[in-house]
Amino acid sequence: MTPNLTRRHLLGLGVFRTAAALGLTRITLSPAQAATQAAQATDHTPALVIGSGYGAAVTALRLGEAGVPTLVLEMGRLWDTPGSDGKLFCATGAPDHRSMWFRTRTEAPLAQFLWLDVVNRDISAYPGVLDRVRFDHMSVYVGRGVGGGSLVNGGMAVTPQRAYFSEVLPAVDAAAMYDTYFPRARQMLGVNTVNPAWFESTEWYRFTRISRKHADNTGLRTTFVPNVYDFGYMEREAAGQAVKSALAGEVIYGNNHGKRSLDRTYLAAALGTGNVTIETLHRARAIRRQPDGTYVVTADRIDPAGTVVATREIGCTRLFLGAGSLGTTELLLRARESGALPDLSADIGTGWGTNGNVMTARANHVWDTVGANQSTMPVMGIDDWSNTANPVFAEIAPLPMGFEHWISLYLAITRNPERGTFRYDAATDSARLDWTQAQSQVSVDAAKKLFDRINLRNATIYRYDLFGGNKTFADDFTYHPLGGCVLGRATDAYGRVRGAPGVYVTDGALVPGSIGVNPFVTITALAERNIERVLAED
Ligand code: FAE
Image 1 (cartoon, rainbow, N blue to C red):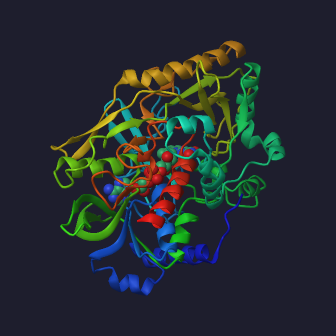
Image 2 (tube, rainbow, N blue to C red; image 1 turned 90 degrees about the vertical axis):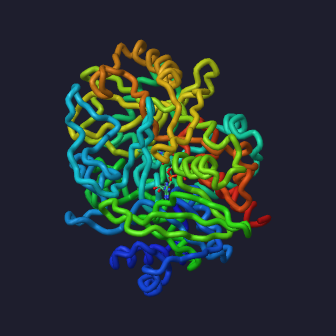
């Protein structure tokens, strides 16, 4: 499926280009107006959206279409201005200041090779595109910028198994989700699938075919997984007819081409309505309620050095939180604990999980080469989710190092029932996560059961050199933070925040810790469902 590039999308894409050319942080259909208004603080907007990831982007588009003037605040930058190398994003193999959110050294998920720290680089601090938020025993990777996680993720666009979706979110009408909102989300996101004939023949997916062979040998099922990366573009990359992106190792620090990130889909269409404005480098910090029932959000505007250059108070009639599982939970927790919104539910901050994420790697025999050339976009998973004794869905992940290394890498999604809780730390004015190593061990044990079988059957072993401390399983980070303001608990069945009428949660914070597959299609579809109801009723 390719997205219909409507007149709205094209208008919106033009707006992004103009804003980038003019260096604007305020992005709207009327750039002249943006330039003159940039200095003035907007003091009231009917609808305010915090963040610009999946939930936020859906919400902004549907509000804009309904004619509601909507302001979006995003703490990251707009990724539309090339650097001195002519590229928007830096190369994964040579990361610079654009790679990470205010770091002086990169913190890549796979930090070592042959136990050597050869991956990370010293960089200068800048609002880069990938952040690693560190808590005790768990780090969370998130995207920063207009488009949120869509800028840095692997693009895998997976619809969860219906039975598991219903188990996780029993109050949501599954028929409506699977008949209406999942298809709508996939269509809008531009989900497409790799051409099977090309997949079977190309060197760029040899690594996937080797993993499939080993799964087959073990009697495990593999399945193709759709993606939002344009596979037509990828085939042209392989043929030398297009500038390489997925085939040039680009992914976690952004793709310069090929990826249908939200700034090209939902957000472009939102801007094209003429009712949506995006302010970048604005970090929402506090929420309070006015006596008349409207809300005021305090936001710090930062410059590229991270210095707060202005603090703004923005009033709104309706407030939509799309700052991601961590961002939204922290804003609401702070509001509750500081006494600004004392009626918020005790459920805020609870029900958080890692989607059972755990990474592992196997060493193959010399004859099972994975290829020096690897596409960064995963297209296949080992699907053992229906194994009730040990459900695992393992994405066959690339490790594009530019030379043959005989490594098969996987991101396993396990059914880990452990949940973490955020508590407000007044000393740092931030949300801290209570999560223990034992809670991650549950994911490791499940993944190990599956990969022990694969190793046994293929006479292969784990790699010990990649994750630090001779670990065979990376259990200390997640790409899939879910929960913190769970649907039907901290909110009603449509994301309306309990104890704060007129405030809504739109993002991954709604999903209670696990969804069994990569989550952005679910987050997008839920946001479509919720905003439709809110526009109809509120
Ligand atoms: P998200 O996309 O995180 O957007 C939140 C936005 O809010 C961000 O732009 C933040 O900068 C912004 N923000 C946060 N706090 C504030 C604040 N206080 N003020 C203003 N702005 C704020 O939220 N998922 C898949 O389904 N398939 C994949 O292949 C996949 N691969 C991944 C690979 C990586 C490396 C990573 C990090 C994630 C991956 N994910 C993948 C997860 C996916 O990107 C994630 O679930 C969604 O992005 C979450 O969407 P939300 O709308 O919850």
